[in-house]
Amino acid sequence: MTPLAPIVMFGWIPLVIFLFAKLKPSHHAVVAGFILAWCFLPQAEFKLPGIPVYDKTSAAGYGILLGAFIFDRRIFSQFKPHFLDLPVALWCFSSFISSITNGLGAYDGVSATQGKIAEWFIPYFIGRLYFNRPEALRDLAIGILIGALIYIPLCWIELVISPRLHKIIYGFSVGNFAQTKRSGGWRPMVFMKHGLMCAMWLASGALAGLRLFFSKNIGKKIPLLGVSSLIALAILVVTLVLCKSFGALVLMIVGAIIIPVAARLRTFIPIIAIIIVPVLYEVTRGTGLWDAQNLIDTSLAISNADRADSLAFRIKNENVLIAKALDQKWFGWAGWKRSFIFNDAGVAVSVPDGLWIIALGQNGLVGLTALTLTLLVPQLLFLRMFPIKRWPEKGIAAIAPLSLLLGLFMIDNLFNDMFNPAMLLSAGGITGLYIRHARRENLFPDETGAPATAPPPEPVPRLL
Image (cartoon, rainbow, N blue to C red):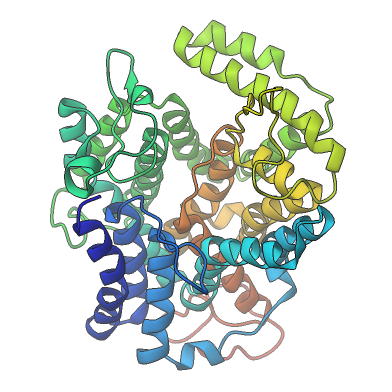
C-alpha cells in the first residue's frame, strides 16, 4: 500500500467538511462527498479502536455527518423517526440477534451491528435528511450521471492496459485478477472491488442520464462538465458495452425501456414486475421450491459458455448454502463464515456470491426480509405518491430512475454482492419524500405556490 492510500482515506473527512463550507445548498456537498468517495477512494479498510472498520463508505458517511453538524446543524432537528424506517433498522439490528442466538455474545453482536450501521444506516439516514425533496433527488440523479461519466476515460485506460490503476496509484490489487479477463479483453474495475460493480455503476449513470436528458432535466450540455449531453451519453453506453457485463447492460436496457413504456401504456405492471422478480426468486429459492436448473439451461442457450458456467457455479453454491441456512432459518448463522460449507480439512467449499444468500445465511429469514423491504418499499412508496400516468411530468421524470434503480439493484444482487451507497441515499430520500407527501406538504410548488399534486383537504404548508 502506498502512503497515498491512508492519506486520502483519513483526509476525506476534512475534505467533506471543506465541501460543506463551500457548496450551497448543503445537499450538493453530500452528493459530491459520497459520489467522489465511491469513485476514487481505495478499497482499503482500517481498523480503529471504538469504531467499525473504516472504509470508503464510512469515510464519506462520517465526513458528511460531521460537516452537517458543523455547518447545517438544524437539519438534524427536522428528522423524525417513522415506522417506514423500521426495515433498515431491523436489517442492522438483525446482526446482533444473530450473534446472540448463535452464542457468540453481545460483544460480537454489537460489533457486527456497528458495521451494518456504518455501511447501511448512515447513508440511508443521510438520504432521509437531505434528499426528501424532488430537487435534491434530481441533483442526486445528476451526481450519479456525472460520477459515471468521469469514469469513462479511466475505464478506457484499463480496457487497454488491464485493470491496474488501483495498484498503480494505491499500491495494491483488489480481487482476483483472473476475473478481469473476459471475452478476449479486459473488464475495467478502476477503484471498485470488481468489474461487475464498475459496470453496474456505469449502468446506473446511463439510466439516470437517459431519463434526465429525454425529460429535459438536463440541457444540451452536461452540468459541470460542459460536454454535449447526447455525445456523452452515447459514449457512456458504448463504454458499458465494452465493460463486458451482460447483466448490467441488460438491467440498464430494461430500465431505459420500462419507464417510457409503462408511462405510455399508463400501467404500473412493468414497474411492479421489477419489484416482484427478486421477491419471487428469494421465496422460491430460499424455500427450496426451485432448483434453478432451467435458468442455467436458458443461460446456455442465449449466452456464451463463460457466462453460463459462471451462473451454474453460483446456482450450485446457492443450493448447498440454502440447505445449511435453513438449519438456522430465522436469524441465520451470524458472521465468521459460519454459514459456509467446509470439507473435512476445514477448507470452505462453498462461495456465497449473491447479497441475498449472504443475508439469508448470516441473518436468516428475518434479516433477508428486512434487507428486501429496505430496498423495495421505497419503490412502492414512489408509485403510491406518483401514479404512473404522472411519470412523464418533468419533476417526476427526473427522479423516477432512482426509484427503479432500487429494484434493478436488488435484481443484480441476486447473483452478486455489489453494494452501492447511492442506492441507500435514494431509498432514504424517497422514504423521506413520501413522509412529507403523507403530511400534505407541497412537493412541487409552482411560481404561485400552488400544489402540483391533487389539492389536499387541508391547507398545504409551504416548504421550509
